[in-house]
Length: 423
Image (tube, rainbow, N blue to C red):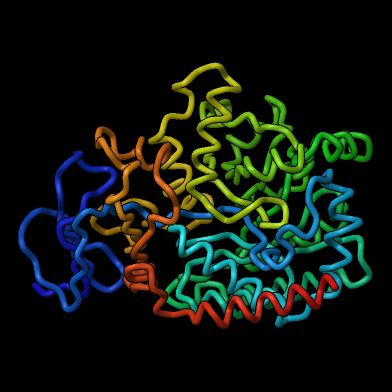
């Protein structure tokens, strides 16, 4: 049999240490993993590399790369109301497109192949995803307190009709109500009704700060989680970003209703929002994935750094070094992310899985000595070790070079947009 792509002599992070394998890809799926000699139309030399499932960024605002370092060291609401929202009001469709393109360059370069995005003008984000070959779940950010809230909801509905399931299922669409403090219950009911009619899931910020929870309790007599449960949102399927300040009862609801969590440790720490009780969520069987949030609320889109930080802070928080071991952090960054976004057969290097694979160069000093590969990957490796990236069986980055993106043009256009927005 001749495969479309063969990756030869590569280690696999979930297999035995020190053994090399050949991976055969047919179409967009992994069709063979073994040590027999196989042939392919295209052969990639995997010697001195390790194959890792493409990482999944379960919550971001990609175009906010244009605002990186523009406003830092502020509390969330002060940062949003006085810095971020005024600049976002000036953004054009071109700004959204080039900001997203810059984010895709950064993600692919560091081994992230899939992301969940919530922002405005999401048709331009979808175009960027389609052109670059990445995989994404897209949501139009919805705010119910503005005069054109109905128009924004219609944009999300149209986004679903235009893009959901497109490009062999690489692009999916969710509804994107922003947060309880920007979306009153009456507006959320409209969002939930529209989502139910479409068969669309929901991506929303929930319980990010204590102030948000306190306000929700004061106005509705319920925590944000309990309020969304009462409104029926969780019956549709929900990706909940942050979930920093959740009660035991909240977590019981989340587990019972299969709410998936996008944990954003760097953003939560940078904005002083707190530390989510992730070990407790995992113990209750809640699917916890990892996200970076926007680069304006974080430093970068490096998912490996996010996984490392998640492992470190929760070990320290619980005083238990085994609470989130390397393998769990790896799962949060890969297969849990795929489940959180609703992508099937994704996030593992196994026969029948979609061929989203990253080859990391292990010929670096911090990859020696080689005991446990998952431990080395999470605790020692650099995201810049990503050398070759495949998404859906297509090579997007080979030996560090982009095959689908003109990165110099992206850098120039993104910088031009940023300078105009913040002058």
